[in-house]
Amino acid sequence: MSKLRSYLETIVDVDDADWNYFSSRLIKREFPKKNTFLKTGNVENYISFIEKGCVRLFIPKAENEKEITFGFCLQSEFVSAYDSFLTQTPSLYQLETLIDTTLWSISYADLQDVYRKTKIGNTIGRFTAEKLFLIKSRREQSLLNESAEQRYINLFHDRPNIIKHIPLKYIASYIGVTPQALSRIRKRIY
Figure 1 (cartoon, rainbow, N blue to C red):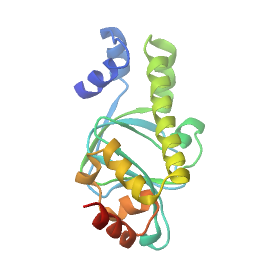
Figure 2: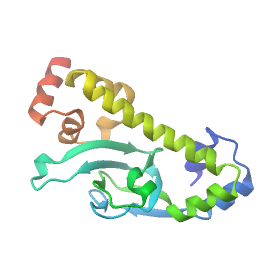
Figure 3: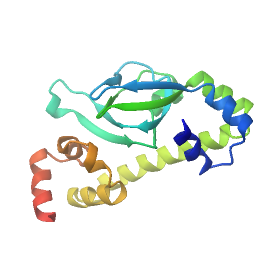
């Protein structure tokens, strides 16, 4: 939990009273590798900070090779099916751990309470929402304006730790190409 406090203190000064109130509502959740902890059709009830691990956001398909990976969240990042969380409606996609993962999670109801009763709640909520929006916006613009090769290069420039944890088939899906096309891109680059 100390990683979460350190991360939050890069955003806003966190006094002990606010931290104690906020942290008392956190739930530690641990998942093994390849665990789908939010399935399509379920409502996302948590926003979580990844203490350690890696999570993939994807749209499942009948054939696993056709699944669409559209996001990754790594250690010291927040993860959620955020649209489902905000609207409290069923998720259209799934969240899956790629390695053993530890999350510090807060429920929707508890987060609303933190917003009302602490000085830091709204600032943290706004910052998190803005960060998630920017990630989504950059990805959309990248898909519309850049070649697959440039998307691959940018991914590792912006998030170099991805190669350590994420299988190439998921990276291929994320940048919008087949695994074979990604192999050709990698040969040209390296």
